[in-house]
Amino acid sequence: MSATTNKSPLYTAGDMAAITRQIRSRWLCLGIPCLLLLVGVVVSFIFRVEAITTVCTILMGVLLIFFWDLYIKPLCCYRKHLDSVMNGITHEAVLPFVSLSEDVNMVDGVACHALTCMDTDAKGRPYERLFYLDAQKTCPEFSEGETIRVIHHDLLVADVHRA
Image (cartoon, rainbow, N blue to C red; front, side, top):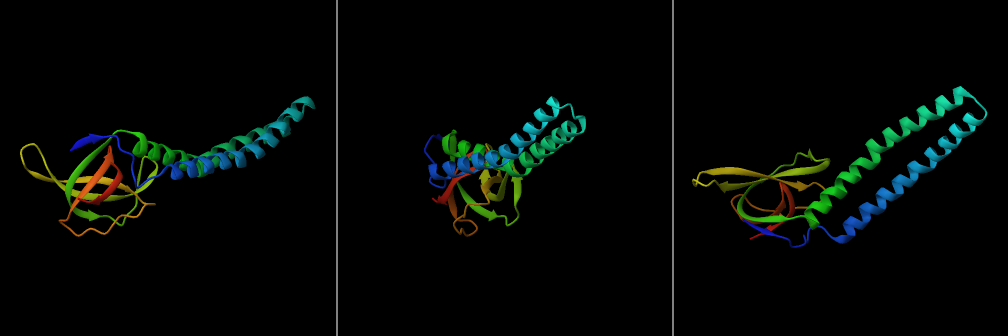
């Protein structure tokens, strides 16, 4: 296993730009209703209407929490993942392929498939090594026992191909 700083061909700068655009547009979609509710709060302060102040404040809080959790946070997690695999320090491992899970696991807020390979420890004993492949990316078909090259950041796969 060796450390490398090569850019990942599985991910491109276009992926990062697309995610950034999506995050900006979702913040804009959230900002407009929140701005209107904030105007309602200010107006209700001026005219001293406590009920409108309370309702607008509660609606703004609910909207912020709901929209953040469902629409913005997953994109921010994916952008962090992209930044890690594209710009972070990656390592390379050449290992025999065991399996690719069809199940989707959430790893640091990113949907991933479990990629299992065989490795040996310092004493030469075999063990299964687990990596996580982005569920939005396609993995080439590998047969069990085939040697593959996995470029990874932590446990997240930056690139995988035949050795």
